[in-house]
Length: 392
Image 1: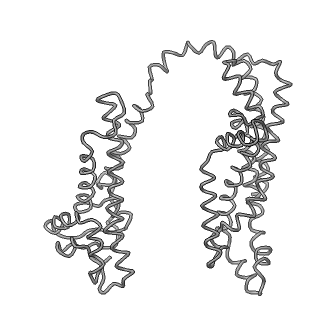
Image 2: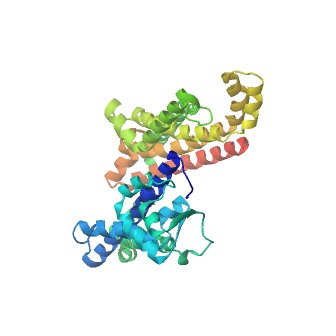
Image 3: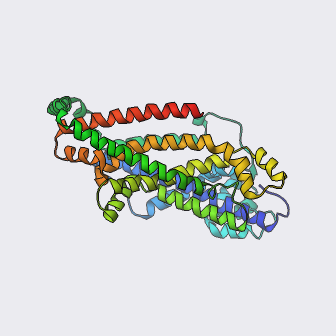
């Protein structure tokens, strides 16, 4: 990544990448290893969660020094991400490690160098060069060993954190006999009520999908990078994408609770929760499809002098109709399943009664409701799959 007389932007990019980004990425990897390692050994030695062993400065020292040593003497994760390799003698690598302690100051000094070199590069006579070394198996690379160690420690920490007890799984099965007896004897007297609730659940999913699809379709044209250009279009694109990502990160169950407080518990709150979650979920699917359309028809229609709306009408929409319908059917399939889940927190439908039966430990009633839910989900899944196959 070196060169003679790099422009200011080139120096800035080089200094930021090698002086800040690479050490930060290496430190992050080592911090994660320290975290899962402290959890693992904490459970192993003390039987409880221990995030930091020793004084506060110890993990900081290990992480910082480890990151600097890794970059100087090996090929660290940050160097892999940046696509660079450090070349030089052992003495030069030692001097590079020593001067790497300058941190952001060293990155700032690199801006004063014509070639954008870090102080450690200049003094040590080493150099970062672009390219990747010849392919080697993972066990012959430091990144591979770090990944293997991280997975092993994470697995051990997970076993301790989740308090996995295989002995209880194998020896306490007889305690569930009473539960299975009730499950295998569903309360058939609830069949009529269950079907009514099932219909309500079905319509919750249907209405949420039908009202979400047109909203998501309209917004998707604002969330497609290839259709939003210029000083107005790009900020709109970023805003719509950001709002969609934030909203999508809130689970439908939380939306059901929010709307339950807003409009009261019941199927209306559940429908609103599914509607909001469906909009942002379909928005991403629709926008990603728009970004992957064939640009050929768009360029051909544009060359005829067509307006922006005409280009969308004759070159874009014909390419997205079938995928949009397929995504909508897929979302309807998901909403049927999720309608039961949001009902558990007061979103109405059969899920609300199922949650009440489970809370009361009335597994015979719960079994009847679950059988009906399974039948509905299977039927919708079959129908949706057949329809999507015809649209493919």
